[in-house]
Length: 278
Image (cartoon, rainbow, N blue to C red; front, side):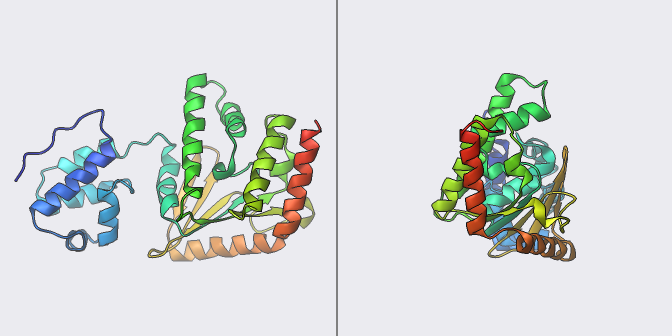
């Protein structure tokens, strides 16, 4: 068996973790499915770990050490591989976005991250964390723009967004920033790349009045839901919880304006902002 590859701090810890899983699995003559059965995970999940798509979990690392007899090797690597440049509470949901078949989200106060322009995102980050350095804010903006690239590929998930009217009426960053932001969204709609509905103030009370929601479905895995508040978020995969979240989204979607009427409202608001009206 080949000697373990030395850990290079300049290499992605997650990629190294995945390479080690593959190396030791193949050294023992195991397929991904066979190793998955030993660990009570699917072979597809093992493949995603090896490809660095999914972030390793602590219980997986402990099971790998036990099954492969690696004396705490993966448990130690986990401490490095689990680090993320994104907020810890959001990382698990973030890693699932590129794998999703559909993404449905309700935005209660701000434009969803996948649709934000750089200046809009910069304003959001600066408002939430006013003491962060300019370079740190710029890095976060860059990461958010990179995340949005999942909408550009041939296997992009279907993105269905319901935005509260607050998201287009609140002048985040001022008139110029909002004009650019809303024009960007309307451009994506007209290119038939996303579906957007606006939930008008006239809808009154609704099923998601208390917060935001993100739902993801997959071709070969159960759906998940993600709910978020200030500096905290929770990923839900319990079928009972996700079905309730899906119903709430359906109720909000039904109460929202049609996609056509929503586009008209978004473009009207963008024109008002372009004319300097906050």
